[in-house]
Length: 218
Length: 218
DNA sequence: CCGCCGGTCAACCAAACGGTTGATCGTGGC
DNA sequence: GCCACGATCAACCGTTTGGTTGACCGGCGG
Image 1 (cartoon, rainbow over the protein chains, first blue to last red):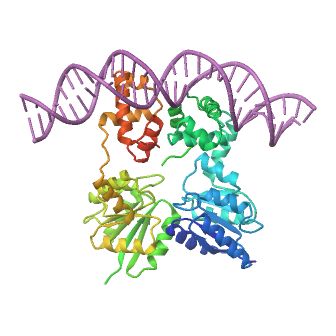
Image 2 (image 1 turned 180 degrees about the horizontal axis):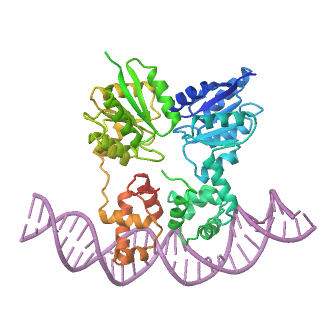
């Protein structure tokens, strides 16, 4: 049985070296190539594809210092830009905010792991992804479960997107422009968000959303 | 000549593996031990010290998921808690906010590197630190220079106090009540804050203040 | 001693925000 | 097919915030 061929995508050389060292210790897993951002990842995938040695799994970070970010890259890989069939993309990142998780899943990621996960968990996730299954870190899975059991505060993806712009300090008009919708729609969304979060103004919404880790802050 | 003995401190197994792999490729550098947080780092340093094989350099991350953070750990190492003489501490982290850099330097760090630095830069930094010299990443050095030339306006204690209430989502009236001042005064303070932070509304002020770590959020 | 700065307050006006009602459209479930 | 729900937009209105101007006081440093 052939090894699972992995493409590493992370902007930190240190992390790539760590993953390479870690994965090469495991039976049945080989690091086929590395990329420092989403654009390079697409290029590498195409290259491997034309070589007749396509990657079986992409291990992708979400935050890239410069260049194409992980969510965008995942979407374009899944769109077939780097060859068909598109390989499963396993997200391996530092943060576990709802916003990140949802964006990744919507882009077509087949797993979401955290960088502080123990090595064996990462190994299992790579194997699962290669087998076409979904692999979620326990923390991430728990958060999703909580969301399902608790129908109280379920913000839609659009609302979370709005919340993120809100947190950057943009006014309603600016948010409307960013999202290509009218100011009226922004206000409607805000009212819904306030209701769901149990607050009555934008700063309080940001405060609550941050504490519930619905959105992330640095 | 003996190898430089390094203690790795990082909460991510992946990163520790990467640093270990990377450093062991270099001549003259040995990884003596690893720790997952500040507390473990102090314990490891003490252990190495009593073994008669003290670490020559500590490579320390700032953000630890749980346990003692890197700044605190650095301060306690420098205070001699893990044996005298205290080894140089080289910060190796992801973010380069002014507040982080200043806090690290104040705690006694002898260098500040970023995780996306090329391997050779990290190697040089370890060698410099071991030799008792200071090692700053070019980006970090540039930022410090910029600060000196262009000092940021300093927020008064009162203004920071206001910012903290602001960030909890309180309106001007509520803030006024909390601080036993009039609403008019709150507005005056806000205008000053906006000016100093270079913004023009409250949410943006919170955003900027958070990013500059003028105020804390979890 | 005098000026500067931080903190306090007031009055005023324009702009942004908050809240409501009501409406259309498309998707997905029953 | 119908209903629920999310997303979109409009018009309206009251409240809050933003921005300005001007003023007073107390401490600190030249």
